[in-house]
Length: 111
Image 1: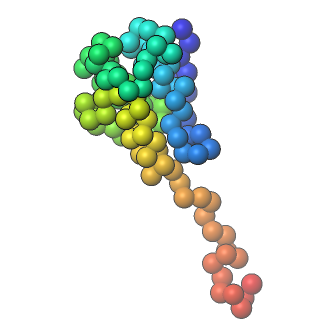
Image 2 (image 1 turned 135 degrees about the horizontal axis):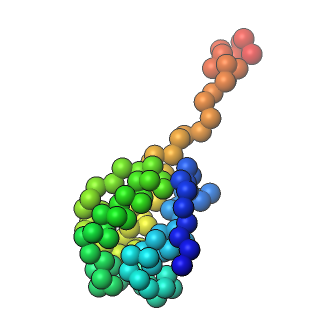
Image 3 (image 1 turned 90 degrees about the horizontal axis):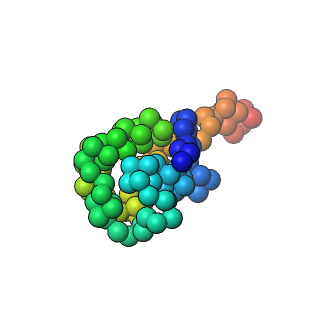
């Protein structure tokens, strides 16, 4: 099974955590095909334990540059809940845009 590697500095165009990345990573820890993981079923029901949960937290920090609490999967036990939370965290961490140039900050009469 191939697992994506490398650091994502951005999410998808709409600011959503790449679901394929999360599904691929979870499938490794849960030892099952990604398509067999129901996003509404608690990951603990698939056998996600504390060691795997902490490892996933480390993967998220490394891959997306997020700082996540070790209780992440306790607080967000399903894929659906986890994706919503992480998408919001990634959107909040994303830069607002390119800095304004000198012309954009000059008074209107000096442009």
